[in-house]
Length: 247
Picture 1 (tube, rainbow, N blue to C red):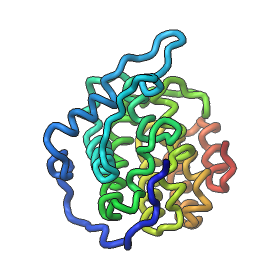
Picture 2 (cartoon, helix red, strand yellow; picture 1 turned 90 degrees about the horizontal axis):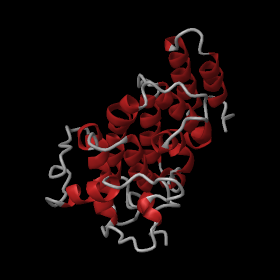
Picture 3 (cartoon, one colour; picture 1 turned 120 degrees about the vertical axis):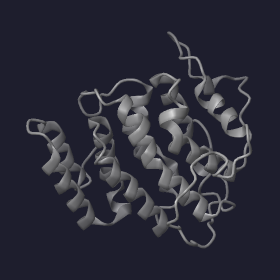
Picture 4 (cartoon, rainbow, N blue to C red; picture 1 turned 30 degrees about the horizontal axis):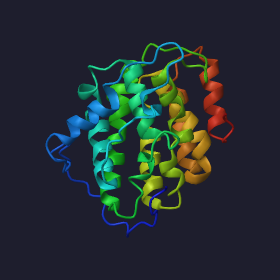
C-alpha cells in the first residue's frame, strides 16, 4: 500500500556542509551496515533463478519511511566505497530495490508525509554521488547501443528516471523538481556515456514536469559542445531528449 503522500511545508533546504556518514545522517549504529547487507550481499541468479527479492519466504527489512530515506542518502553518498565489494550485478539488484515500486515500497519512503522535506532533499543532494562515484566508474567502458545496455546495473542506470515512482508522485512540488533537475544536469557532466544517456533519457521523459526548457536547452547545448566527434547516435539522442522524443 502506498503511504500518505501529503507533504509538510517545504522548509529550508540548507546549504551547510553535510556529514554523509551514517551516524551524521542520523542512523542508529549497525542499521546501515545491516541494510547494505540486506540489499547487496545477495547471490546472483543463475539460469532460470529469480532475484532474491522475489523469494516467497523473503523476510523484508523493516524500517520507517524516515529511516529508508536516510538509508538511501547514506548509500548514495558512500556507494563508491561501501559497495566496492559487490559485483555490478549485486549492485544492480540492490539499487533496483530502491528504484522500482514493482519490487518494493522504498520509492515512496522519501515522499511520505511523515518525512520532513529537508530530509528528502538531503537524500536528493546525495544522489549525484551515486552516479559519479559508483555507477559511472562501473559502466565507464560501456559502448552499447542506446537502449541495449546489458546487465542489472545497466538496466538500473538507463531506466531509473523512467520507472522511479518517487518524483512521479511529487512532480508538482518545486523543491522536488529543482532537486531532480540538479541530479539530471549533473549526470550530463559525468564522464561515462551510459550515465549521460541515462540523463538524457530522464530529461526526455520528465521534461514536461521539469518545465524549464531554456535550462534544458542550455544544458544539452553545453553537452553537445563537449561531445567527441563521431558519436552521431548520442548526438541525435540528445537532440531528441530536449524535445521529449525518447523511448
